[in-house]
Each structure stands twice: as structure tokens, then as C-alpha cells.
Length: 283
Ligand code: SIN
Image (tube, rainbow, N blue to C red; front, side, top):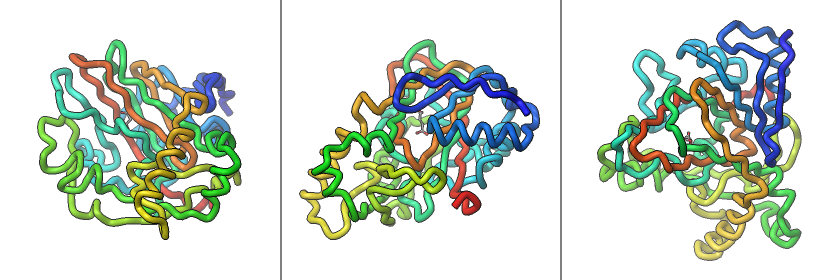
């Protein structure tokens, strides 16, 4: 078994992991140690990993089945890998700049996501992660009490519907996004959920993919979601991840929000992404 070198980020979540070569086959004890670190820190960054597309796929499958990625076209020859790409001269809106949990509008959203850096700009392009277990624990009692039993309505419409951000008016984007009518569908999840593996209580999802709260008038729901958003994305619960070339990051979609940042105009940025799907075996 490999002994992992895990260095916490010093923020609410996030750790860097060394001492392991992800391009070689991983034994079950090493996979278990990575899973333990993932559940503890929620976001793991593995620097200096030169990985083929096949190795990225193999790594992902250690943690669950592939997820179902709607609206993304995959890279050629690898149907479970999507390219998060922005070319140097691109002027379209930044992809994934709003806080979100990946595909939270699905009935069984993914357990996690892996991103592998291929081209990293010299500065900017950090990814932010917000720890939702910590955010929940910091909520004022009155706000937390209001959330108990509330069920959020999630939808992909603001992004991926034909009239959404990445819909028919979105031109000049290097990423292969295919918007369609299925984005208007809705799905519900409790605002406070229990992490299936650790049993910890966590907030799940945020305004954006969350478009309302069941049984609550729209304005009241929006006001509550916006107040909650401030706690969900407070500096105290955020880890800012700075990319290096050949870095693999995996995060736990069940208890962190994330978002992309810009600041690299004139430079290309390319990451390969896989989704760790809903895994019945850990529930
Ligand atoms: C994503 O949300 O999948 C992309 C995040 C990023 O580009 O930093």
C-alpha cells in the first residue's frame, strides 16, 4: 500500500495529496485511503500527475460508476470525458462562474467530479470550493430552523435550456455544450441532507440550479435562498484552488459547491472532466 502525504489546505476544505502515482494501477488499500481523505477534506488535489484519458477514466471508476453528463459533448473517443475549455481569444461568458453542485437537477446527482488540468493559464482561472457541512454549522439558529424540512426545486433551465445562458444565443464558445428542452425539467431535493457516507448534515445545492422551494411563494423563496447563499459562499467556508499543469482534483459533490473564476484573458485554459456517478454501493 502507498502511504499518502495529505496536506490540508488550511481553509475549511481541500487538501493536497502526494506520495502516489495515479498513472499506475492502484491497490484497494490505496483507493480506500484516498476515499478516506476525500471524505475528510471534500476536495483533493493531486499535483504532478501525467495521466492519459484512459488513466483518468480508471481513476474515476475507483470511486463509483461514471455519471450521466447531459448537455456536454464528450471529447473524441472518450464518451465519459468532457473538455472544460476556453481559448485564448474567447469572449463568451465564463463557463460555470456561478456557484453550483454538479447536475443537482438530476434525481440521483453525481457523488463527485474529477478535473484534470491540461493547459493552465499563467495566472487566474482558479476554482473555488465552498464547504457546505461547515456552512450549515455556521448558520444562525433561526435561519437553520427555517430550513428544516424544506424541499428545494432544482432545474437546469437557466443554463442549458434553449433560452438559457448556454442556449441558442451563446456563440463563439470553445466548449461543446448542447442545450435542449430537457433542461426545463425539475427535480426536488431537501435543502438540508445527510451525507450518505459520513452521516454529516450538509446543505445541498444553491440558488441558480435551485429555482424555488416547494410550497413557498416565489419571492419569499428567492429571499430565503439569497440569504442562505451568503452563508453558503462566505469566505470562511471557501477554499480557492490554484491550478498547476498536470494536476488532478476530485471533489465531493454531495457536500461542496464550486465555481470557476476568470482573470486569464488572452490565455488558453483546458481541463478534462469526468463525473463520479451516484453510487448505490456506498449507501
Ligand atoms: C466545472 O464546474 O466543472 C468547471 C470549474 C472550473 O472550470 O474551474
